[in-house]
Length: 564
Image (cartoon, rainbow, N blue to C red; front, side, top):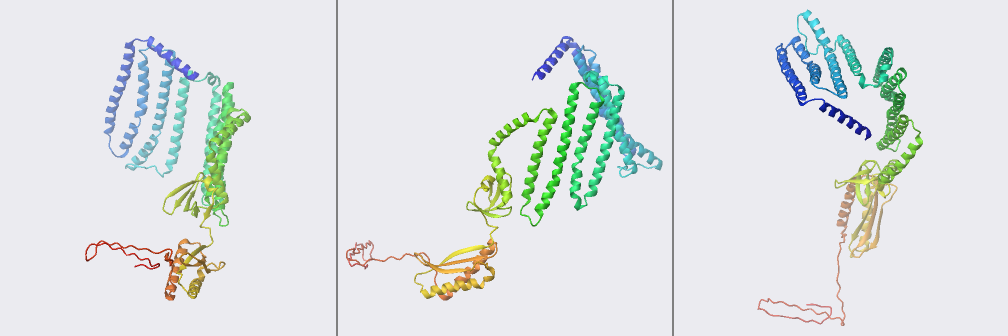
């Protein structure tokens, strides 16, 4: 806040000096120069474009027209610099504003130089096409240079020209705006800067050669299925090599230039941070090798884990690397001991753990599910009486699909603590049913019914589990029926197969009972009237519509046990 207030105060003083040192007519004249100059520039440029448009639409003329038109941004920037300088002439400017405007003009000039060099590099294409095809007496086709030997040379020449343009623009800007840079930069002799440029060129060239070698080695290993780990290790070195080259360049800069103590400490912090970042990025990329090995282990037929383990390992390891990498990165940047930082981190971690305890419970619940494996994706389970299919096991919740199509999200904390029936892992399907016959069925027929059911099940013995024999017994006297208990074990873990098998058994029992005359019972109630003189039965019949006319008749019968 203090720095912002100081900067705002300095700007206020500069603008007050600008207003006090000039009259309104000076500002008006300066604005007219800017506005009139830009309008004149636009008018002249449109006329020039019309001249260029008169060139032919084919051949080299078309290429030259596009080439000349591409210099419009460069020309606009240069004229803008001239107009800004002309607009300064009528005004009396404070020293601070003159420095700012000088920096703005130098920056625009540097950008104009870079754009000019970049556009001028395109002249190599046009020059080569003109030289070759004018000798042959024909026009160059479009995309002529693609696939030609000249293409690589031309690309390298243009790349070098662009780099030189950027370097020249940077030198121009720095040299013309010495006031914007600290004085210690100008205290070093020129040969130190020349040595730095040579070192930078060597680092860039060496880094590019090393990266090209690593990429070529990686490409050669793509087809080798037994060298995947080596290819992943080489790929993990690509970004660390770039960061290491940058750290080396900054270290050489610190050792070459005489800097004040504050700048030395800043460079040391940056170099140390880059060194930690190199190791951190390399280890983070090496986790791809771990993920590859875990994936291979999961895909083996003799393991009990699924791809959720790969996701868990990937996320946990990356979190660990990022957390510890951040700690060491802070230590390298600040240079302070880690005791106080770790203490604060521990207090902050405790606060986060208390605030996110539900999330942590779900996270540990997901770990328990993945390690204990009570179910996997695709299993049919029974949870709180609901028959559901497991669709996805996440780190916070498990996604379940009911048989009605509804989607359920159950927190992993609950999934790890409740009783779950895994229907898919049952080795067989057991069926218990009660077959009821009427009470007036003679004992011989009841015994015959039991034998019939046993024979029917015996004919389907190949579909029953051999270790669990069929159980058929007359076991209960129900309120309205005689009960026959039937229990058998379908040997396959197939729900709909068990349903179809049960249907065959049901039809067989119905046909056999119908043939033997055994009746199935259904809920019935029989009422018996007491024959007791102390409790006579009194019945009254009232009918108001007789054929002979309206009359009331009451029949009183005191004979017990009989009604009329």
